[in-house]
Image (cartoon, rainbow, N blue to C red; front, side, top):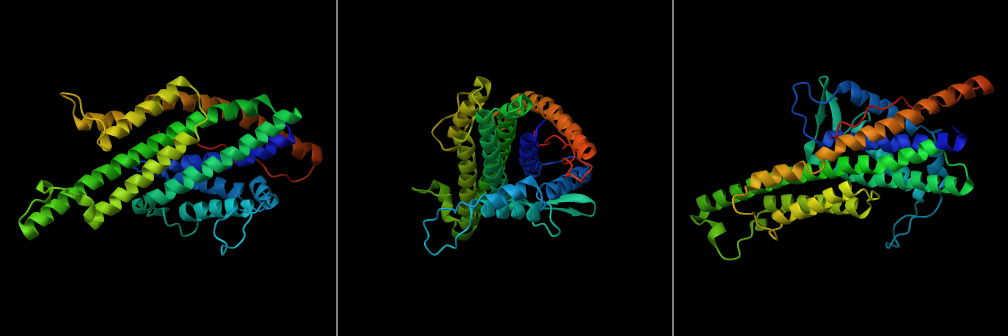
Length: 329
């Protein structure tokens, strides 16, 4: 372990906590619900990793490049400040003192599902940013001859584990919105029948999106498809098993836009079930590979921190506690 790896691992761990926040984008139907203890662990880790003297905070302060904007009236902001602001917004909305999206209510975790897309926006954008930061450091270390094999091994397994989680979360949320849309369409048709005595679905040019509720949900579905396309566009995993999952997901989407028809005897419920589980079978393998790589480098990092304490006789920032593996699976 060297100082460069120690520094970037603190930023990497922040990206992993953000990744694990995706758990709150998946339904939890168990009697206990989401774990309060795990939530508190993540909160403490997040707070630790964005503290004023943390590598993340130092990185953001040093990144003074001005964000390019097409709006001449927009105030100038550095890239570092923008990243820092967005990360702190996520922290406040999920783990802060008065969080809007996820909170503890009577010793139960409560998730405001009306803000799910806001949380998904946070996670997908910020994880990609922090992952790129870590990859940038890795490439620099490689050129300088200081890259440690264990860190490179961790980064190699990080993307398929994160992205298989993220794709599954996106697909689950798309299907939830699709069911909401169908319910809204049925309600719109029923109301029109009762009000006008006419079934609008039998009329030429029927478009349920003239109804505000249907239009709103349709917009949300389109946003989720946008997240899916973003994840696909930034995919770094060349594993043929993983890319096959993406190909199959693309094909399933065509059932929903009407460009692919059901085969004879095929039920739409079966399509939805298969679509939802596209990444389920591969997720456990990617998770296991990530756990092995992370545990190896984390243990070495912890030993390195203890060595610094003994050798320097000074207070050093200890590594964040070892994180729980993601429940978004």
